[in-house]
Length: 315
Ligand code: SF4
Image (cartoon, rainbow, N blue to C red; front, side, top):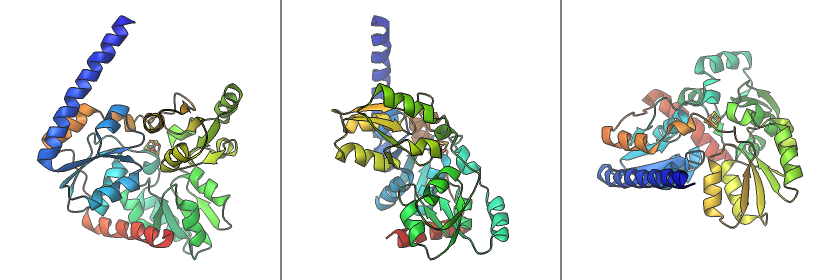
């Protein structure tokens, strides 16, 4: 027990030391630090803002920071670059990618568009800048249903997440053509995890992310984006909540709702890419002003068009 407490203490003091250095350098660089809801707890704790990817990029665009440190994955840093072309965007580990975003390439999307000339192309924000540039508009997991309902189009090509696309299709009358992409982390969550937790925690409410498979969604009380889960935890009267998404969000939920109980659905629903970002790497990226993510201007302008169209339609 003692040894464990000792390890914890030295880890805490190491993190405190790193946090202090990061704060000092952040001021010097006039940087803003963003952390996605799935980041490690210690990374969330040093961030200026914690949230979902689009929300964070929008917040950063409104600040007068010269530098954005995006603690997340590559497409998120690209989204920040799309919205803030004059700021330097740092991704503390350039290898932090998103396997689901990589399941749709611009070339494959162009080919599919030729096969489906009448379809409106809607891409989930979890996609590369090049794929956004090929799309008519973007969506988030929070606004996908509302946005597609409002579109003056009957046929939608939905990229890249087949499970989010399928979930949307159950809520609208539009014809939705699914791209065969998926999130490997959310796919680890199985219906059996929910059934077992319902038995062991009969009073808990179950919330899951729409990137989960449809049989998991069918067993949940609510299907919510990460920001929707944070709101639900705050505003609902639920005292015990089973959380069906990536593990990192539990840190934020517990911090913001110390009197409530959060049970993560499955210990292996952890995104290895999100966990590549560490305090050491955040500090190094600020010291070296690298690795930088910059979307080429021609791609950026077209990708920004898809984001702007989303904002117009969703209102
Ligand atoms: S949790 Fe899934 S969608 Fe999110 S970055 Fe990881 S692989 Fe991509």
